[in-house]
Length: 271
Image 1: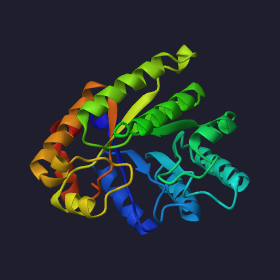
Image 2 (image 1 turned 60 degrees about the vertical axis):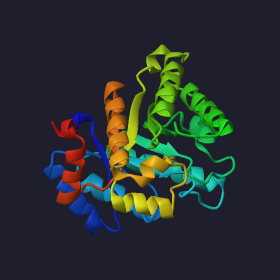
Image 3 (image 1 turned 90 degrees about the vertical axis):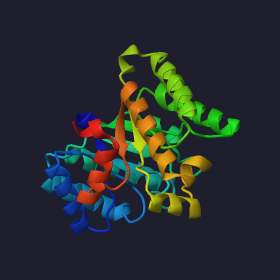
Image 4 (image 1 turned 120 degrees about the horizontal axis):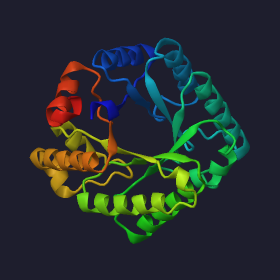
């Protein structure tokens, strides 16, 4: 399972980025995701691509690209910026990006609007999916959007949001597998699945209750018991393993204490 493991890292500057990547590589973790949020966007994101591409050629990096955070003045400018971003990724041999609309969407500049404009770009595209929506309208909209994305024939991977409802996760995975199987082009049926993992801690649960993350659905029981949240997280990880879903650890594990917490929670992930 370790070979499939990916780790997402956030950082405030290149020095911190350097320290975190050095630590992960020392633990034989080469698959790294770079989010597009907070300070990591616009010119700094481009600087990061150049820095990692020049100094860590052995790392298998997937960059996220948020159409909301990267929006610039208007749709034409924003699309031009995206194409420049893809060109820079290709220059440094990054073969895939995760393209997301963002938690707050720009009208007519969402993933479903622009996928076909990327048809001639030589890069693999990942898209996000949230299996944990509660309202029926939200579930139907998320499903409809995924069908449009997959039917474009350009999607290489689907990235699942984290949540705590295992029943909802199982239901949506069955839906996703059917969508992939029913594609008009059978050669595209090898779409890879990734699933987010957040390692629970007292600090994380307290912070989330005070300021919930938009689009992340965690039950009352999950948020009010570290024992229950740990148990549910292990069940989700086991579900990923059983369904060939590669885990993406979003909790920072680029220092020894954090690394050991992840290792202790998922014993077989590092075997």
